Image (cartoon, rainbow, N blue to C red; front, side, top):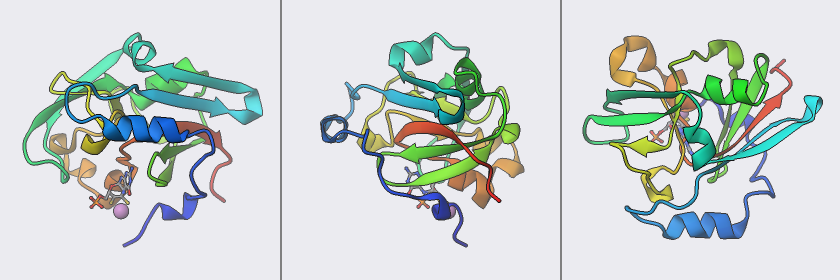
Length: 170
Ligand SMILES: Nc1nc2c(c(=O)[nH]1)N[C@H]1C(S)=C(S)[C@@H](COP(=O)(O)O)O[C@H]1N2
Ligand SMILES: [Mo]
């Protein structure tokens, strides 16, 4: 079943070639700079959070396997909700966009203080674009059946580059 791709409207022009290439070249070790754009056009909010800024927010972590990885690992980073709240976004719908043209929308009401997180560390290390980084929206899949659903998988966007508040789906 195909969900979530209806929201795709192409790569934002703000994703510079340099960013994509720079991150793409990083493998293991140094993971390239995480940069997350947050915007709420209707309320004039626009900011970019780098790794240091993300690290100042409340951190969450959990150990889990995923359907995309081959062992249990620790995922850590701020919750998506904490990031949105930091930007003054507390309700409505957000559209998450990846470096690879994938995008998904999520109602803010379906986010919690603990899940999903915007993971910027796996087992304590920053991770590269090739490893689905440097930012990956991750849920503690192993913790409950509800997190092992196609909807949650579709929301598990990796190579996250931007979050924008949008009009709710009709
Ligand atoms: N960046 C990015 N994240 C993504 C996707 C994608 O294409 N790009 N696909 C999503 C969807 S619809 C699901 S179901 C799973 C799909 O993962 P799979 O294609 O590895 O099964 O990851 C989600 N996260
Ligand atoms: Mo999917």
